[in-house]
Length: 312
Image (tube, rainbow, N blue to C red; front, side):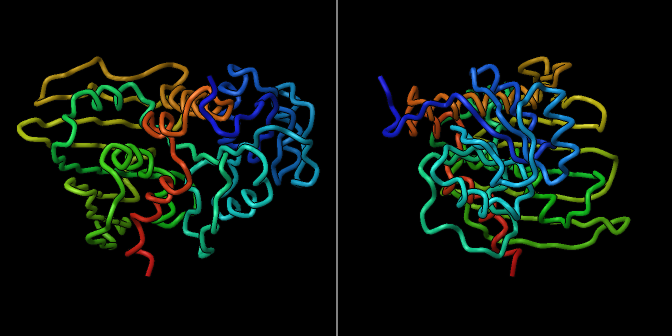
């Protein structure tokens, strides 16, 4: 039985953006999707990686791409809308953020077969916490994230590149956000700091995001529901795989943590990509994919929406 109104034969793909884009390679191969081309503005990089991975074509112009069933967009966020418009008749998996801080207005109508990759809900740690939460009971969530990596982004851009991952999971669980307040300042050691207070129906989310500190990405999530307190911490240190500490329920470990030499975060992204492909092929419904953690364009824009009051 096919659940997608317009199921597609997803047998071939092109990847645009050779940095994070190659993360999808494993999931595409596991789904028996042939990657026919890599595109990157750095043609030498594209050619080198295409040869390394046995991919037939490498190019630096979208008009040079061969016809494919699926396009992976993993280029800088400022280019996403242009690429989505160009490939609107092709199935698309777009890396987050969907629009970023672009001043461009969202498209009046999004392509039906466009999905955005937010993979945090596909972590085993997130799934465990999902099962600990009681349906319909109010949740107070606090997300603290810190990043120190060598790219020239401002705090809002870094927020959408890093803190958006755990926040996407919280929004998936708790619903569409409304920003109640936002503050931006410089703290200790001149570090940039961004604070948000969000309401998702009866739920509340507080976000504290800062630039600086030790090299890497660090997340701490605390959830309070009734008498239960749930905590999850995760970190990425350059040169190492992501590592998540044991999930704590009222201070008691519920698992042994989450770590894999091949990186549990990359594995979560593989599961996200594979789930989208299964839907595009008509094997699962749109509703099932959304419930499993999939992000349609409108749902993905909840992350940008969280920053609305900050961008005056």
